[in-house]
Length: 116
Length: 115
Image (cartoon, rainbow over all chains, first blue to last red; front, side):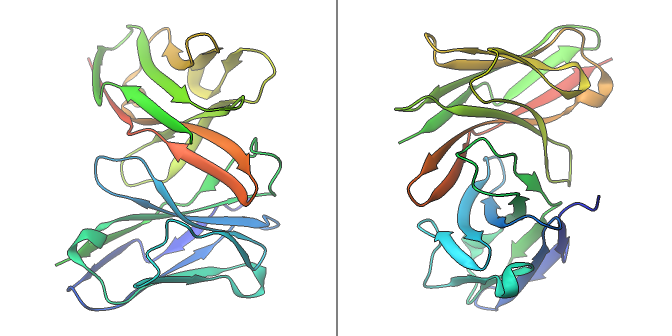
């Protein structure tokens, strides 16, 4: 079974530029998550989709971050404009469904972003 | 609100020695608890999870964890460390909210295995 795919794996941009990350979840997984992992910290949830609808985006900085999951499969996370503090690894995860909190989330390899 | 505290950001063990990683949680309702491992430049991989069945949970690669409600702890252990166990380990708590399934991670513990 193929895992969660993410691209690109690495990205270097200058502040105020824009950047987009792509995620393809495990086939059949209804729930998709985007996390931000700053160096030396645990991942922090940015946004969660159930199919193509947003379930939780309370931690997403909506003035600069946006995400979509058209057709309930692939997802794109965008940052515009980027700030220095956005330097982090962006992890995508997926799970089968919202099964009361006990579902396992499967993670992709992440996109490492460096903002100069 | 739920939270996770991992005691010790770095742990150094000798090959063959016991690995003990500490995790304490805070949750107003019975939690679901997870341990994930992250190897360099990779995503997170599930080691094991507690979902209110047996309090002693066995996972992959010889790891196990014990849920202790009275101590609000979910410590991870492995009897004998291997060089391949060098990685970062994250404890996480999950709770079903009205608006979804929120996974909150601790700060992580980096394990160094000495030959």
